[in-house]
Length: 293
Picture (cartoon, rainbow, N blue to C red):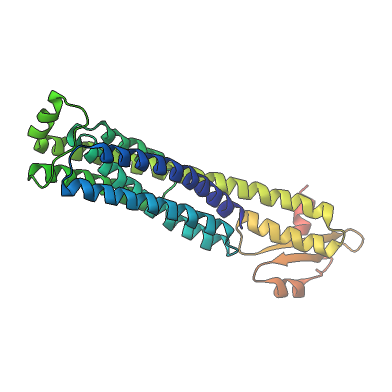
């Protein structure tokens, strides 16, 4: 793998491993809460079935993560598969949080705060567009849940009897407005933060790549004993470091006062070889640079 892609892969892989463990624990806890709820309405049974499906889904994602890790394919292919896996894992996790809100008090559930914690935690691992989509998916999920309470499609499962439960149910339209504004503001902040984080990571990768190429440039002179090989390696590495279209190296011969070709990297390699050696009376860039000293 290339250096930057290798680091991106390892970064995302480590995140997914930890996220899958936490998701498994969270879904298991929510499932236990749903199982201990005294009601046996159709919605409760449906929620339990979905949560069990998500437990199996997370287990399948864990197996898939292991398979991706063992693949021998190229770095970009593995990274693309990992990003797709990460996206669907986020969708399952957000849906699980929504179901967790439903079985732990609905509009009165403190689990709603996990939305903010979760989206803030994943913002560094996903591209900006995916972060924006996941934020709006959270908004749509929570507002759909509250709307279902408002029209009487289903009722929240209150774990603890509290006066706040009825107050929350009586003010669902107001809660929808507050939730929409809060989650939207959070989405904007997170999107900006994600862009800045991604830009910082890209800058760090570019700096690391630059330093790696400088190291390779220094190593070329120590490891290669063939003079022509040294020239050619230096030309290629300098071209990569400078992101240049063409780089050529010259060799000055003091005895004949001529410029000889060293090596070239880029599009004019053959043309470069034809131009040299130079006439002793001709003023070249190499000769001008030497005289300027």
